[in-house]
Image 1: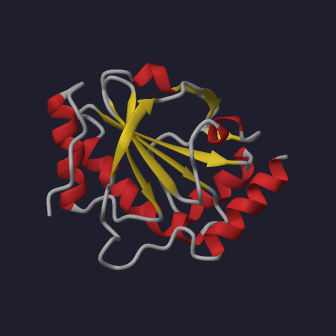
Image 2: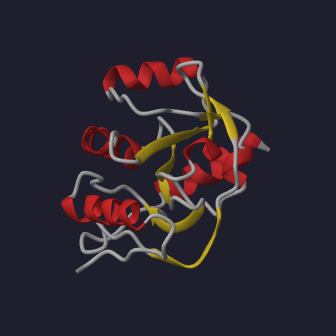
Length: 182
């Protein structure tokens, strides 16, 4: 089952299932039907345990990724720059690795150093609870624990427009979804 899931995500990623046009590259689409974020508990490559529910009251940027995914590698440095700007402002990044082990992730971070949490979904149970169509896929969870936005494909997460959306969400708390301004 795990191999089928990984192969499917690989095919979608390589086939362009996550490629956005240049105009759409920085969009952060609001979901028409926000839904409660399924909770999870995962070990990170650092050995710590991460539970989504531990971040209630904060905005969570939850990114599903893998080391073999070129668009995932492309966006990691921007996610690290974002983390540097928001980590003490009620916004957290959980980059959920799909199907790989701590050694693989450790080797990856030697080339792409990050300081935000990297929980490991080794058996694919967490990604199965979210409608992921390819990697990377990022969900934004609002402070009330609802998934309000989804971005398929890589983003420059340190783009001022995307940061502004996250900051407005944090300022609004559990209010409705915040839209990306043109």
